Length: 580
Image 1 (cartoon, helix red, strand yellow):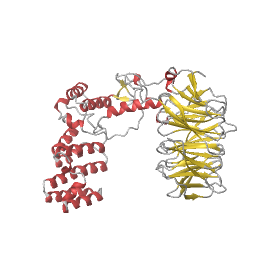
Image 2: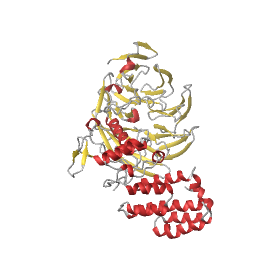
Image 3: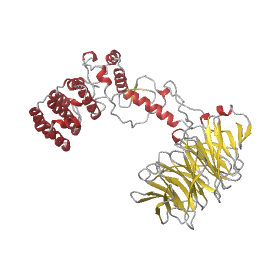
Image 4: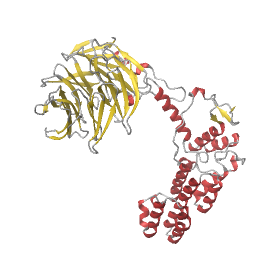
C-alpha cells in the first residue's frame, strides 16, 4: 500500500499544492525508540533478512520508508520540485496514484468519486473504511446545508450516512441540523471556516489521522522523528541541567559534569545549633531554615548570593519544619510538639499562633489557595485552620505520627502524611478516600514532586524510594549510597525538570543521583557534621542548599560562578572559592 508497488512515473502523478500539504497536521504517536546514535546513520543501502533494502549500519531503516518520509518533508517545507525529483530519481512514490487521486477528489468536493476511490486504495480494516466514509459524507451533508439544499442533505443522511451503522449519536445530531440549520454554528461546518477549501483541507487532515501511515504519511513525520531522537539523547544525558544548553543535529548531545551544582559558593553561619529544616520559596527568591536553637531564618536570594533577611524568634521549642505560602508572602514554622506560627516574610512579624489545648503540633502545610493551613497534631490527628485561627475540620484517628512530614497536593484535594511507621497516608479529603503507601522498613521522611505525581520516601535501611502516586501507587526507583543510622535525613527533587535527587547523609556528605537512571552522580564533601536536609532552588537549577549539625548552611553552585566570589565574612555569611 501507499505507492510502494506503483510503477507510474512521479512526474505523471497529480500533485497537491504546497499550501495544502503544509496545512496537513501530524496524526502520529511516536512509540518506537530510535536505535543507535546519529553518527551510526549512514545512507548506504543494505539487504535486510526480508529482502527489502535498508539504510544505516543497524539495518533497521527500510529504504522505501526512509525515502518517502524525506520526500514528505521536502513537500511540507515547500520544496516541491526537490520532492518531485526525489520521487523520480529514486523510483519511490510518496503516495500511490489512487491515494493522490483520492486526495485531489476530497479537495475538489467530488464526494461520490472519493468514496469509490477510498475502496480501491486497498484498506483491509472495514471499520477504518466506514469511519472514513462517514467523515466524507458528513462533509457532503454540511455543504448541501451550506447551499440550502436541505432535501439533498436529508437524502445523504438517510441513504448514505445512516446505512453505515456507526456513530449513532452523531447521526442523531446531524438529523437535528435538518430541523434547525442554525445548529451548524455550534459544531464544525463549512460556515465556520474562512472558506470551503479550508474546510476540505481540515477534512483531509482528519482522514490522514484515520488512515494507516503507510497509506498517507503523517505530516511532519521526519521532524517528529528527529525531535524524538534529540529528546531521547537529552533525557539520557546524565548531567543535563540547563535550558541554555543548545542541541544540534551535527553531533550527539552530551553535557559535562560542570552543570551540576557541586561547588560551595557560600557558607551561612547564623544558627547557633543543629539545623533541621531547609526550604526554598516557590519563586526561588527566599530560603527558610529552622534549627534546634528554637529560631527560624528567612534568607534572601539575589544575583549577589544569599543574605540574612529576618531571624524569627518566639518558639519555645526547636523548630522541626517550615512551609512557604503559595505566593511566598508568608511562612509557617512548626515547633516540636508545640505550636505553628505564621510569619510575614516582608516584615518578619508573627501574624498568628495556632495551638490546641493540651496538645502539640508536629507538622504544617498550606492549602494551595492560601486561605487555610493544615497541621499534624501529636494525638495523631490532622487539623485544617482558617488563617485567623478558627479550626475548620479535624481528621481524627491514625492520621499522622509525632515525627512526620505533611504535604498537600496543588489541587488541594489530597493530604499526605506518615500515618504509621511503615505507611504513608494519601487522604482525599473531598472523596473521603484513603490510599496507603506500604513499605517494609520504617519511613523517616518524604517529599512531594512539583507536579504532584511522585513521592520521595526516605527509609531507615538507608534507601530512598521513588513512588508514583498518580493512579495506582507504584514503586518506580530506589536510590542508595548515603548513610542514615540515627537521625532524620531529608531528601528532595531538583534540577531542570526535577531530573535529579539530592539527599543529606550522616557521613557529612551531600548525595546527588540522576532521577531516571538511579546512578549516583556526586557525593559532595564540606560539612563537618551530619547533613540533615537539602533543598534545590526551583527557579535556579544551578543552586542547591544543604544544612547540617555543624550549624551551617552551604550554598552549592557551578564552578564558573565560584570564580567570581571573594573570601569575605559578613552578617553570618562566608563566601568561599568553591574548595572543600
